[in-house]
Image 1 (cartoon, rainbow, N blue to C red):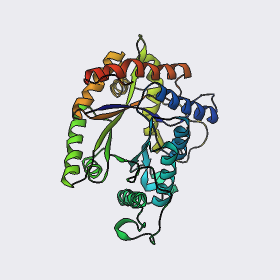
Image 2: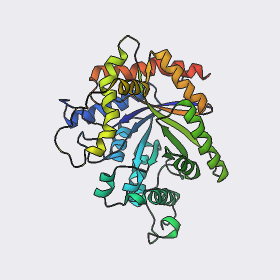
Image 3: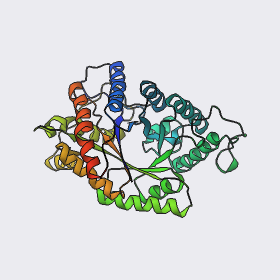
Image 4: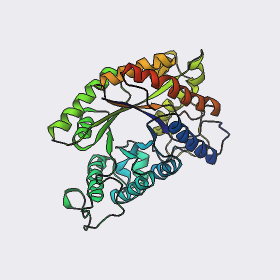
Length: 350
């Protein structure tokens, strides 16, 4: 049993009215990745979307390679890379190069995607996203094993070697993000790990049981990783909610706004006012409190996962003032992680 901690999800989005340049946002994201390693996090994660007016990070593997080049120990992961939008062979090449730069620290989290605008722009039918994800998994493994790549079901490519190969003969682990029961079963069936989000501890327990049962039923060898990524904000003083509220609100609202923003240029708008009910829902969607309170909440997820969990703290908040952003990462690392490890019965990591 083990408890690991990730920092993310780095998106380099531009909060409305933020005066920083894109260059500033990317430079600060790399600094936060370095901070995460220095403070003892186990991993750092990036997230993908395209054609969003706030500049949501569209190119994950270049960013992962940059993080890898600036760090030495920490795992570097995608949460999630939208596999149906990528050519599988090119993805195998780019991921192998990124993995080599990192010295074998890449974790490739894969998702289906859902925004029609992205699929339309890349010429990919939305209805094909499941077979394209499965084909990508098969091609990645063919390429990284050193087989001649022929595609899913032996069709699609002429049979060619894909080089270079990654550090491990098996290649980077493939963790599959999923929300619905069929997708969770698919993650257990084809993935090396399952990535959950937007769940309570009880919901996570059910999802983990489903994924692990499918993994076992298909005779998959090796450890099956369980991860969850959730918004988190631990603050030792009063006023934590008042500080983080507008930035947490922006991130949560922007996912809904993406569907409404198709083809919208110009600077990103501010989210509309939220109702009292919406405020309560927003407050309930983040792990918030003192470091001790947040550690207790994380421990509930660890126990729900059966004691073995990679907890990815979504501590990256577009627009949060830079001193507060760095302080929040440090506070989580220095005050939450040791408490959570103690609750899990683990000794502090060196």
